[in-house]
Length: 437
Image 1 (tube, rainbow, N blue to C red):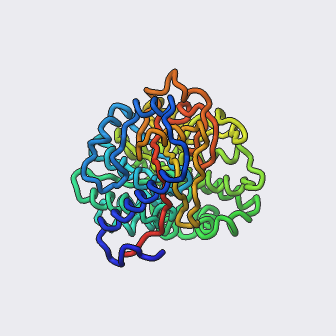
Image 2: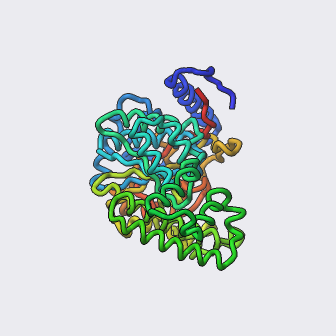
Image 3: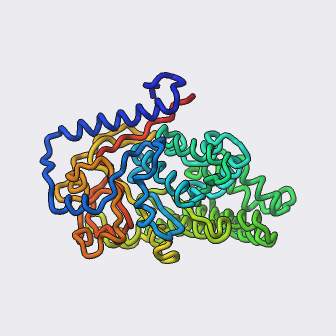
């Protein structure tokens, strides 16, 4: 897109442009003619919410976020959701929260909803001094890696790597993402397992197709090839685990995860999705994240960056016409294992525009009357954090309430059963394609 701040403009100027745009959207939203008189629910929110100074990650002071310390408590895992991957304003707000969690609360691992292998290798490269921008582009899904509003997160990863307390990048998705997967995965597995040339080709042949084009050549594999792949994957995993060192254990987990991805792609029918197949990705992402927390980053505190639909719990409680009674999200599996050690934050907005780097921006409809967004907008606060874990018990929010934290679709649910907190941004802004230096 056009460089509206001038090619090569300072980073702070770019951020000022983003924030100025959000203020303009907020002003427009305030003039759209809705009755914004307070309600009992809006007064309830205002009395309990933490007002946020803003969403600019470059804001020097993080003092307004200090009340989050008590809300999050002793949780070792904080999951930061997002509605559609197309809210640049949410990316900025999440980055500011990551800064707080890293600098004030000791969370020192950022786990992205992107490839386990590629992001782990990218994180190692950043710690060795590689440019964070290049490493992220080689590992993280483009919906973030190519977003201007995700750039401050990348810059924080790079800057912190030069300190004594870095924020380390990893990933938890079973999908094989980025250039790093395509170029480095097969050689790393062959070398670590000590394979002779051509050995276990029943695994590496299909893996090459999976890395090149999972939607085409890989999915056409005949049954015998699939069976041979599964057997070879099991043998490769066994050999890697037999090394009994950190690298062997990590690559064994990568092979286990990749085998699930392969079975998913072979079995899935996106026209008639079967819950037992669709749940495999969430189950494997949960397994990967739990493995990272118990093995690779044992004893460390982790921030997971993911879609709210994956981070949520109890999707069976969402009322029709959006029933997901058989969906078991990653967040539910993590709650089953970690209890209150996992804290889930959902983001939502009242007005503005939404759009990812792959789509044209579109206008958000005004919030439904009586929805959470409607009441939050009536507080007059431009941004707020509302802890549901401690504030919601016995409140109106435990009743089925309309809200749109997932996919920007208005749904009805007892939201405290699905998340632990809401971050409300009065105005949403789309994600823009990154501006090159």
